[in-house]
Image (cartoon, rainbow, N blue to C red; front, side, top):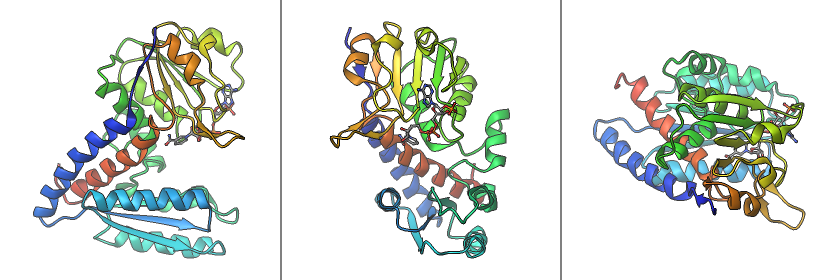
Length: 285
Ligand code: NDP
């Protein structure tokens, strides 16, 4: 068996063209979706992510603002900027690029974003709404995983989904969204005894552990669908996932590559949330 490649790059291009048409319609109604991204300090990786977000916004016809603040910015000044953006009518989504400098309390900052503008879906109100199944902005990477499965016509309901990783930004929310889609879900983590025995039961295996190529064919049931969220840079400079692609592809039915799998979906789902926020804040459902 050679697993069919799920191209997040192609799927995200399709979604972006759908979004572009929907943004154009909203602009005709006098509403231009606006996203403000705040970056504190000079982390080079964060700067690349922020520029990509701004570029995608503009490509889709949305308004984009980048607020670049120096490393020395106080928590108070950052909270004031968020308070101003919460009031700003041309801004529908606010995103604070993480990580923040150590002197700033991350949760204080995330909690200060108006939940109605929290397009990252990290505010406790959004998380709570997601868990109880209310309408909310879904966290971008986990929602990207679900969208990849749906758009690849992979049945989720009734399947055993195993998620490896339990972080607040990927593992836990992806497990919750799979549950919402009626999968039977098992969550594994670094303290799981005999990981392979559990992952081998998965019909759908989602891996988000941040360990380069740690999951191999030994962990995968023949015919399983493998979604690799990991992004790791090897010592020789290659970009690889948490799954050993070559061995895993040989046993899986479908598999996401790295790069070009889950990665491109994250920004795309952020754009989806920003459009949704612009509609919702203007009373359009
Ligand atoms: P974290 O480091 O926050 O969490 C890693 C999780 O994996 C933890 O729950 C940890 O368990 C678990 N874990 C670590 N090692 C093992 C192991 N050997 N066996 C089983 N479980 C293990 O990472 P993130 O969730 O933030 O990110 C995971 C990966 O996804 C990273 O490679 C990251 O770069 C990538 N990523 C990709 C995104 C994208 O857009 N494609 C977006 C966000 C992340 P424990 O809780 O017990 O410590």
